[in-house]
Length: 622
Image (cartoon, rainbow, N blue to C red):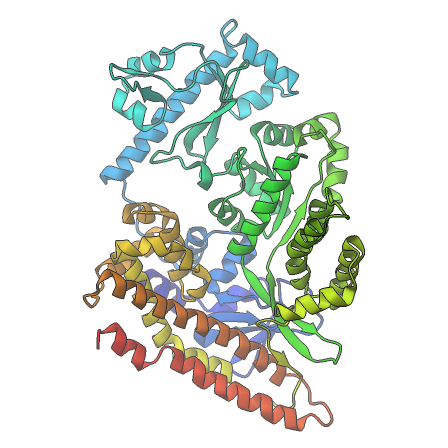
């Protein structure tokens, strides 16, 4: 953790936060109004000794690095570089002398050379005529062709091959880049892209990773992409992300479209926060890229059944990948329960029937802006999608609609809104509202996993900070052990669905866990991670572990993950109870105050015992 620890030692988190939030000292800590949500009573607390912060209103919490990432819309590496510069620390240079680095750089250069060739053919007076005419019919100007370096691949089996060979590129490298294909029967190679309109695809840093291609004519497949290569993974990249990232940060909003033409039309008309998932459903890797830039997602997929299904799949995946926050929800008695909700605003831009986004934008940018302004909240879209083709005479269709909509209603934290949508569902399926309420209660309803508390009398000063310090050492040990297992036991790769990066609370650990999920090899992780984490990655890969059989490795991993999850649940419950202890006393509430204070003490003991010496003895194989 060398560089991160050095930054913590040199930079006071109070100074970092004070650049954005006025703070006042309260005991050992500092307090101010939360920068992540609107509030009248300050509930945002900075803990200098722990180099952390927590908002008791919206649940936002983390380290100084997390704060900079959230406030400045930076990824981990960018935030680390920013803080290192402020601290006067020089980060290690990224070395490009490894064989893997050299190969990737070579593929980027090959793709750049191919893009230049394709672009020259598009602009060629005779060769690119049909492609240029098609682009004009789609409403795209020459300026946008050149800005995005659109191209054309000749109707030939080997024109690109000969061009690249004349430039000195080896056939093996062209195969590795996915530009040429080996013949199945042997005896040579041929161009992958022929008689197609070419769309260069760049990664977040602007490096040309691969190509998308649309057939000119009636051939199949209509769209063809580069295959998986060392630098191209279709599910881990978004079209135009290199061009859109600045606008997404500035506008704090990302518009997610389906195809290349949608994005090109958007950028041509000044809608520069648009990206495309390139004709497939949004993936977890693509959502992870976007959530570093904004918490506001607008889906603008095609207005057809396939578009609806892609949107629904993207929404479900978003719930799994995006962060959550804990919010207080009052019930009819005035008591407070706490519920986890998605820490993001997801809306659906409804397309006119038969119209794609590029058609709407091309015909009337003002109409497009109106559609964006009227984008539906997720719950309203789900109602429309679930009931659009509902046969009210078919009980199975009604049951399917309830099964899809009731969980979404259950997640609404606002009780008035929840009641509204429950009534709406009851009217649609012609079922008594009481029956739906019973179904919600029988499945745990909105109170599932929530904790009940009320404002109480007194505050046991410092318990939150003390508990955090008391468990820091055990938490680091557990997280490091878990990561070492993942890195050193290849058989655990099959358990990827069990890994939840948000359970890793210490700087760098979350980044390493996320990188492990996205990369099957240590080298792939190394390429994705910031250089400051390389030393830690190497230490975890070499960390001494007891000899474990494959089945024992899985048992050890499950045990460790269970403890990390339990720790997070306890942490959240204790934090909300601590906040209740900060509230003014209520008449007649002293008995409950004693109960709450006792519960906080119990939670603190549980919190410190979750990762105790028994775990360490088990880790040592005793």
